[in-house]
Amino acid sequence: MLSVKKNILNILKILLIIGFGYFFWLMLKITLEYIPLDTNVSFLMIKQTEVIERPEYLYFFYTHVYTSIFVLLSGFLAILRKDFRLKNFHKNIGKIYIFLILLLAAPSGIYMGIFANGGIFAKISFVTLGFLWWFSTFKAYQFVRKKQFKEHKQWMWRSFALTLSAVTLRMWKVIIVYLFHPNPMDVYQIIAWLGWIPNLLLIECLIAKKYL
Image (cartoon, rainbow, N blue to C red; front, side, top):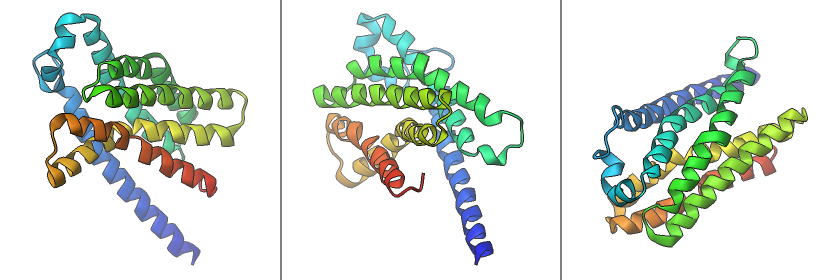
């Protein structure tokens, strides 16, 4: 019975790795669209007002885009810590994850959220997401400093659930556009909230049931 359970868990882990690898590749392709620097490509094509009127916007945008891909990867590798036999791997990869979010990815994301498409409700969502992302990561950092590893793990899961909003937001966008064909600005208002709230609710449920 134990061997069957172990095999099932191994299969689920393999599927998780494959699934993450696929979505990470999609996110990497999006990131590579902005290399070399070009303000007339992809997302920036609909942000020309900010690009022209707010020169600092591009600095925050590129900071967010270039750091978030490493945040996504380092967060996932930290979860798979037991599969790596390198000394202090989890500790070092975790430092990268926390450093990038607290100093670069989250602050730049908050700034971008202020100018998000979709009106005031979308702006509120993205700014809230940015603050919660920063706060959950900071709490994880505080707890690991105190060697309270259970609380650290739970807050890191909350943080990574918000990190994954970059992926789930785009998944919801594809589903909603395919099924309902709404106005593009309406899409932003919907996915702004769907991108991260279900992720966080799922993690809170798992924590409450003591799975994490």
